[in-house]
Length: 373
Image 1 (cartoon, rainbow, N blue to C red):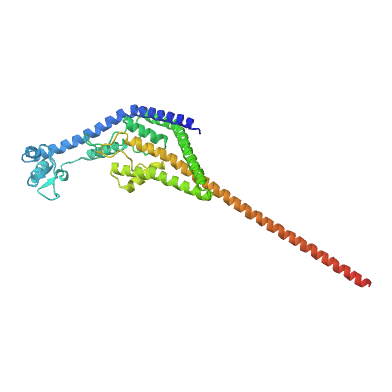
Image 2: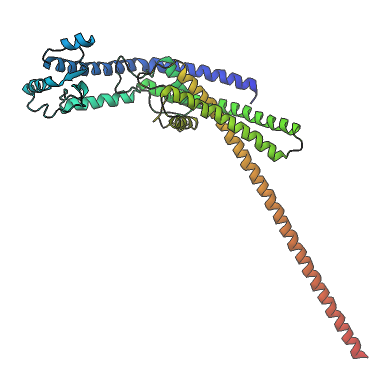
């Protein structure tokens, strides 16, 4: 593919990605906002219910708490008032606060107190909300003050569009509206071939660079064997690509996401290979302030990394092809030698047979001559 044609194709694919991001944002963002607000409101109701319950049953309400720390939201419950809370709640429910154990100290953390009494319906509502939040790419523990980033803002939608056309498909967030699902199918059908063409073109440029590097090194080192030069250049290309597209991005991901380096290496490989399990996804941590282009840049690095992998696979296939040709040539030489040996043996056998026949004929002539004499 010519460089000019590849450049035009890259521009078209980039415009196509922007189009996809805009459409996905328009189709999915409104529903995502509603889901997020619903989850946040549910958390507010739970916390309000918890705070009201604790403050209502404390001896002095939350007045002392407010005077101490400047807020009426309880952070802990004095141990001498735990019995009072238990007695008050027991008026509403027959069995509550049977055994209260804390973590030590003068008070018990309010999160360790059995404030919530849920019916089966309420328990399943909590579970359903957690499942609903997870399906929409939202951490179930998210609140309005601390949540995982929205997934259908324009930048996030652009990153999603890239995962569609590259077939990475993490699966952590997917279109939920009927129009979004239909558009995703059409978008993938049209975009995947374009992206494959771009990756093929970039891979071809990389492969040409490897070949030019091989030729340049052969000119500088004319005494080196061609096989040695080819292996050296391919090794340098492989190590450079692994460093740029796998090792270095993993360092950035590990720093930003707070993962271990081994987890980041695992995530980067799963992304580069387009396996896309979705168990680790960058840019989703709750309470983390991400730089806006972070996910887009990481995704673009993986896109170029896909071209690098395509080039590696192409070089590997060429190496296998060369190996097959070498084996074929060697096998052909061995077969030719075997045929030549068989032909020589056949010729020798024929000569021996002819010599034997001539000797026999000579003996017959001598016998005949002797009998005449």
